[in-house]
Amino acid sequence: QVQLVESGGGLVQPGGSLSLSCAASGSISTIIKMGWYSQAPGKQRELVAIIRNSGDTFYKDSVKGRFTISRDNAKNTVHLQMNSLKPEDTAIYYCHAHLLDLLDHPYDYWGQGTQVTVSS
Image 1: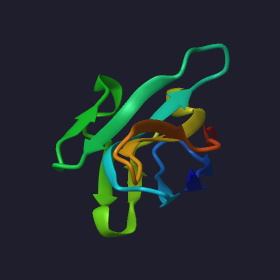
Image 2 (image 1 turned 180 degrees about the horizontal axis):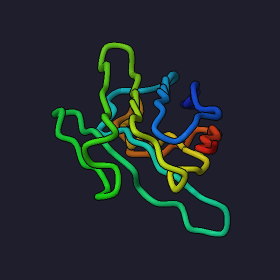
Image 3 (image 1 turned 45 degrees about the vertical axis):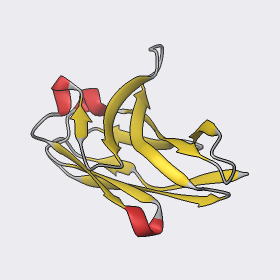
Image 4 (image 1 turned 30 degrees about the vertical axis):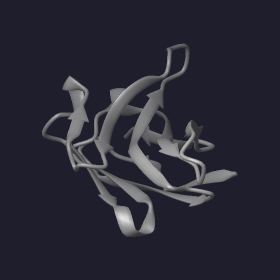
């Protein structure tokens, strides 16, 4: 069994910054990629940023230049630094991991979600 535990989030004024972290623990052989998705009220969950085992990253267009994703492979953690936040960034942010368990079976896991609210 694998758990993803998120931390960070909260309320910030437009133009402010927040940092999210997610730690994976449990029966993990290899984490292939980790990332963050967001879901605003009434909208579908969408990809924000991912980072692969290789270090390659992907960002959705609207956060490029403002958000930075990083990863500590030794600690199975992923971080999302969010700068210059806008009201439209308001959403619940979910951590996601695509990984291999101890038998090298692939699985997808989700965190419980953390609220990010950008408002004056």
